[in-house]
Structures are given as structure tokens and as C-alpha cells.
Image 1 (cartoon, helix red, strand yellow):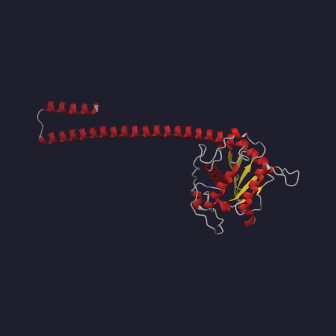
Image 2 (cartoon, helix red, strand yellow):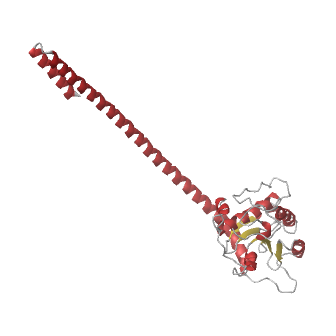
Image 3 (cartoon, rainbow, N blue to C red):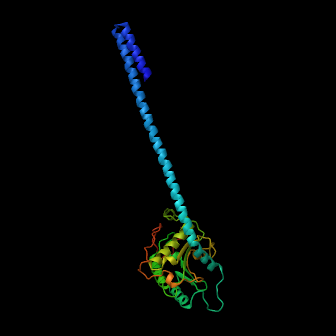
Length: 304
């Protein structure tokens, strides 16, 4: 800009020294001056635009940096929460695996892992619902068949399963059972989850499907007054089959939700937190991401 002003000054000096000039010379000099001023204005406008773009890029970079820091903090917090939950669930999960891996504790004919009155109540319950429930009295394990409890590829309990779990909850809340901890474990067959509707609802593979089904059952128990302080939840996918996955009959046995009434360390009833249906411990069931396919009385299609 200083150079441009100097040039204009020299042009004016030349004009003053030469005195009068012709009209053509004057017009030519005026045109040159106007062009120079226009170029100067354009240069200043370009500089302002460049500064504005630079400031915008700088703001974007700062926003990205701040966003990255926020995401890192959220990830760290989430990881910490997951670690705490895993630690809290470790003890009751170990009890569950101990119960399943050891042989039945039977020393005399008819002896069971649980007190006789509780074992008898669970046996009667299973006998009244043989197509949906089985009871292993030697280990204290109640098994809900997934094909009757859920629609194919779904974690949504059907109406029959809800009614059955309500009756089961009344047994779990009885004086004979209220002191025991409970482990709810979901299991699947070895068929991959392929249905797009199932995947879109958060059941990306058998790990998710088994865990979400276990959570759905546990939430229904809590809805019916079972204290959540007694409950542990796990998903085992297809890692603990009880039959061969080479046949449909075997795969149907492997698709199950097991509820283990842990017989090793019954808790004191006063400290177990057991409450009746409708009292303060009751919470609304957790709403899971799941398929909305309705269950029917027909044989289910086994595609996930």
C-alpha cells in the first residue's frame, strides 16, 4: 500500500512539473490511478477473507480437539463402570459355574440340593408347566426353554412366559427361598445371528442375544417383587451346550435361560432385601432393544 501511495505521489509530482498536459494524457493517468486503487481494494478484501477463513479453520480445529477430549473422558468413565460391574458380578457368576460343573450332591435316594419344601414347590411348578420349564432338583437349577419363552431372535417375553414367571416369583419370594441368591444365565445354540431385524435391535451376535434374554427374565422377576440384590445376570452364547448342535432337537435344548437357586451360601432373610410384590424394591422392567415379532402357538422358525 505504501508503494502504491508513493507511485501516485510521483505521478502527481510529474503532473505538477510538466504543467498542463493533453486531455489524453490526463485520462490515461487517471485510468492508471483508478486501476491501482481498484487493485488495492481487491487485495485488502482478499486479505480480510483469508483472515476470516483462517479464524474459521482455527475454531474448527479447537472444536475437534475439545470433542476428542470429551469422547476420551466418556470412554474412560464407561470403561470404569464396566470394570465395576464385572467385579460386582464375578462372585455370583463363580457360584453359578461351581454349581453346574460339579456332580449332583446326592448321597441318598431322593436327596436334593435345596430344602425339601422348596424343592417340592419347584418340582410341582415344573410339572405344571412341562413345555416351558424343567427343574433339576439335584443342582437347584430351573430352566426356561427359549423357544417357548421368546419369539425367534427376540428378547421380548411373550404373554405365557410373563404369567409363568409371575408364579415362579411367588416361589422365590416364599420364606423357603427368600434367603437364596439367584443367577440368571442366557444360552443359545451355535447358529449365527443373521436376521437384519434382530441385528438392528442390538442383538449383534449370540453373546448379545443370550445376555439380553437373561436381562429380560431378571427384569420380570424384579417386577414381581424379587429383590435385585439377590440377582446376577450373565450371557454365555453357545459356549455351554447341554446337547449336540448338529440336530434341531439338540439346538432347541441349548436355547434356554437358566435360573440357578444357589444352594451354597443361603443369605440371612433379614439382609437379603426380599420384599413383597408392589413394595418399594419393585422397579419397572428394563426395556431392551429387541425384535417386535409376535410369538405364536405355531412351531417357531429358528432363524435369528
